Picture 1 (cartoon, rainbow, N blue to C red):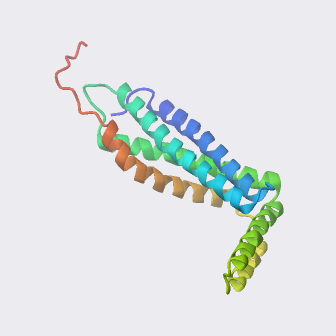
Picture 2 (tube, rainbow, N blue to C red):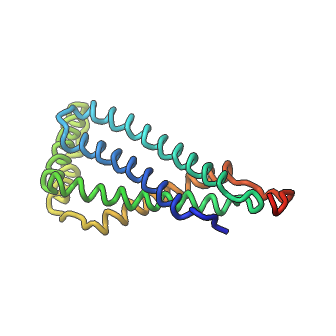
Length: 194
């Protein structure tokens, strides 16, 4: 059922996609917590970066899956289920790498610095709401900030589980479409000696 090199291909594809998505996460978190840009500029850059990351995620999953389908034995084909399981497996590896990168980034800048960077962004958001006439949000913002400051740094396992569950869900959603395009029917007319 699995051709030779399947696991190597799966690990390589997951590692490539994982490193790219991990870099995306680090850029997003750096912009949100450490940059001196205004909230509006950060929001716009964050949105653009997110759109690029999602597009890259989908394109690379499609490309890796199509390449794997082309490497399969033509007599056996590459079924929809095989393609879907490949996409979800690559997404799982990506989620593990992104969870590790999240833990490393937060640990590198320090959890307290990370929380204070987020609190500063929340303060900017509260000022924007107040300037636009939004009232009644002060208690919500104060409670949110209090909860953030009193929470402990999540463990590496919590970060990996969180990232893994997100990427599995994303892999399933995207994989349902990608698998339909990359599947190959078996070619029963190929002789054994070819």
